[in-house]
Length: 408
Image: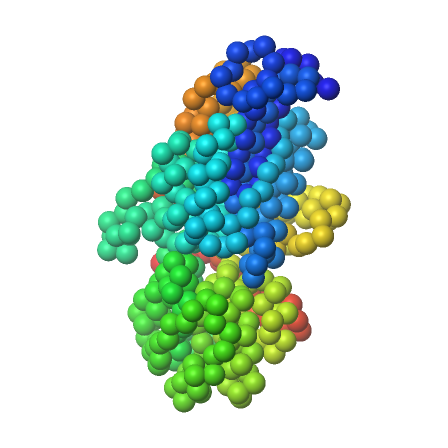
């Protein structure tokens, strides 16, 4: 039982962060608790069901782990963290509803998520209007942080409350193009995207760099992310003379697409971004040997800074893997925890009435050594970590091919 001088912070996993004020301190937000104190919630929004749930559950579990560790070490004196997770099913409409729900709960002081850039688009304005910080461990759509005109060189941050620990497609797409041309020696590519914010944006930045390097796009198609029958496209790829396929999208469609290509005798690599770099891609495509994917950051398993995270995750015995975004999710949650620590520390150990706005400012100034390396944000709210990795499927697993920084 906590005494009345104790602050309790709870972090919600799914896009909502809740703060409950109890006791005799006179805070205006919150509800009464059992023994007194203040409860704050951080929300995580992610797909916890559906095709992309493997990634979403990894995000949720990793935030949960960050909260547990913060509580165990008393990271913020007088404050305890808890989590609550909401399911957006990887679709904008549920994500928007989750954002509205989280903002309405005055106990929420920060959000980790979402996974999908298209979902983030539906949430940003809602969070920004409420001064509620949002940190995505996975969004790579450039316009989310740099505005719709970023590709023309006109960069303008649309929402001051939006941050991310993942690097953007302005880096990821060109990095993939450089690998295909310079390392894999592939000069003819068939380009496919799923028309979503993430997939179309990634394909566009890939195309720009690939053609700049002398590569040729021998065919271009757009699919629906729910498509699973790609016979027509397979025929076009087969007759195109392509040396590789680049797919802008996610693993639920990429896996079957690659499998159908191989079944038709089109034995060329399919390459995509971090949206396909999941164990589930391999489950969907047992013939994926040689397929390629880029992922933001360096391999977590090879980072000394991630050793404790990996050990702690294993010890926590989560049923599901932390997946591609686990380390970035932990760091996103930790950035909010550190912001809460800074804001409470500057206010006598308790959160002020305008805690949300002050937490946004504190995240902007955040700088610490995280699971994925140095965690800090630039003037757009983007991560300052611009490193990426190329993976290939080898013997039923994703194996590191090359890591480095985009030479743009």
